Amino acid sequence: IAMKKHVATGSVRQGSLFANPGGPGYSGVEMVEDNEKQFSPDLNTSYDIIGFDPRGIGDSTPITCTGAGETPAGGAARGAMGAEDPLSDSIRADAAGVDPAPPEDTEVPAAGAAEGGADFKTLIDEITKNYRQKEADCASATKPAGLLDHVDTVSVARDLDVLRALSGDEKLNYLGFSYGTYLGAHYAELFPANTGRMVFDGAVDPTLSLGERGVGQAQGFESSLRTYVEQCQAGLAVQKGQSCPLSGDTDAGVQQIRDLITSANQSPLKTTDPNVTVNGSTIRVAVNRLMYSSEYWSLLTYALDQAMNQQDGTYIQALYGSATAGGGSGAPTFYAVNCLDIPVQGDMSTWEQQYRQNLQSSPTFGASLSNQDARCQAWGHNGTRKPAPIHAKGAAPILVVGTTGDPATPYAWSQAVADQLESGRLLTWEGNGHTAYGRSGPCVHRAVDDYLLNGTMPKEDSTCKGSE
Image 1 (cartoon, rainbow, N blue to C red):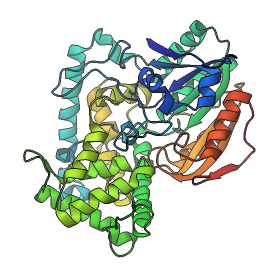
Image 2: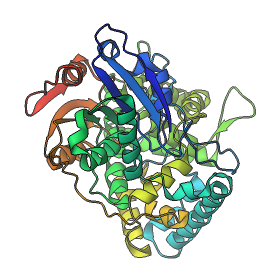
Image 3: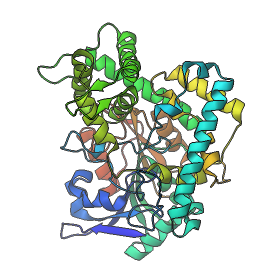
Image 4: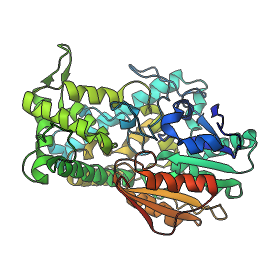
């Protein structure tokens, strides 16, 4: 297991703070290497901040795949403290349950599949073929091959307790984002007496099945898109000198984006590179990724304006490239972990029902957030531990931070986790995008730091608003 420590810069050291950036599949080592963007000066002064690559990831013994374009799992951490480069890692997906490599539109069937029947079976057959091939590519290249059956989150939580002991700390102080909250919750359940100050930002509800995660996220991403369109039309998601290319009301604006996707699939947009064109799948992925980071919505506005009014896909391609470029949470690792964590449920009939529900609640993104059970069944390395509440009885107080407009880990999930945890308390950020700490204003920043540094929990029902 690879670890990296950023030594406390102050003269009075408070102990270690372990951190996980999300995924499953993101590198805690790289998160700590990018320290100044990830953690506040006060945390750096007081804590040795330790990042680690969970088993199967990055500089730990990695899951390695031989398929075209696949690389050892791991890569860039989320921009937890914000990023100066507007086309940076911070617009990458890192949420448990969101495929970091969304399926190409070959896995999104023709309109007829929404009605089910033979077209849906064809879709599942295609998914099954693709994910069996992914598994074969990984099984042949991963050494030891048995690693694919031992990268579940409970095993990682046990590793984390060993790392805590090696660090010399009696208690685990921990800051986890997105999937990192799921890991932290399992740690607190397994080792409640060893928990110190723990913060879960953008929590993942452990009671949900794979299909239920997809349903929640389909609704979350479509809701975020509507919020973006509203802000664009109101002039809030534009830079000085820009105009919003989306006309009419919110429904009309959302439909214009869907129409752009459809049109580009039929007639791809040109870019400044004569060898690169932009199709609808590229636009959909770029828009999906920008829902994670509302601070960059003005960039999306500019890219859409160029695409819609100049038929120029250059800026869409730049956003897409930034969102999907090397590193990050590789798809094989994502499935290797999730498919061991949550058992396959349902059958063709229930999968089709969820698929149709997702298409209805999220016409823009629903198809790519569906059929996780089918993918896991084809992957073949499956767990049996059923989703269940985590209470962590006897654990120290745990601060859960939930963002009301979070598309990837919907606010209801953070509410649920705070309720389940015996010692949980919810801090709400009324904002948009994925997670809060480092993206929101000083209100959240102060509350998180105050707990980690001083042990002071925010008051019950505390809420931070916007950039305050």
